[in-house]
Image (cartoon, rainbow, N blue to C red; front, side, top):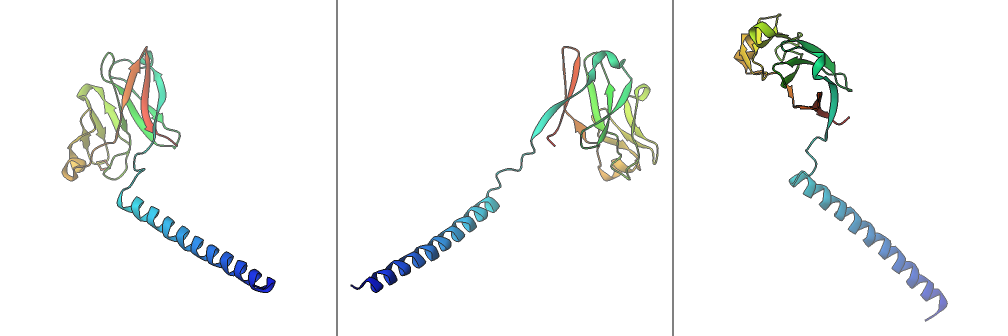
Length: 153
Ligand code: FES
């Protein structure tokens, strides 16, 4: 075999190896994306705790507004000695501000008389008719400190 033929063989081998490597890489990536489409892996939203205050800041029946790092606002109401409710203060009907009414033990939207129970379930007004509830954040009280679970940002 001449030197020129050997060079031609090596060049042909390299071209074939690159071509088949590219084909394998392309099909491999396609298979990975297809499997991720069939079996979604990462639909869980990462959550973290956020400190929102101490138990002494609110008397039973009082409430205050808290803001998450991504700008969402919530009403935090003290509903018992160690119990707090934290619900979105944005009415799911048309977006008015909702507030806590301790004497009635419910959240209230003044725009169209929307009423929500302490868990955020709509009980009267247009939100109840449409089955639109308030988003509630999970709370944890430990050693006099109140935390809520929020989305990792
Ligand atoms: S916007 Fe709240 S009841 Fe309509």
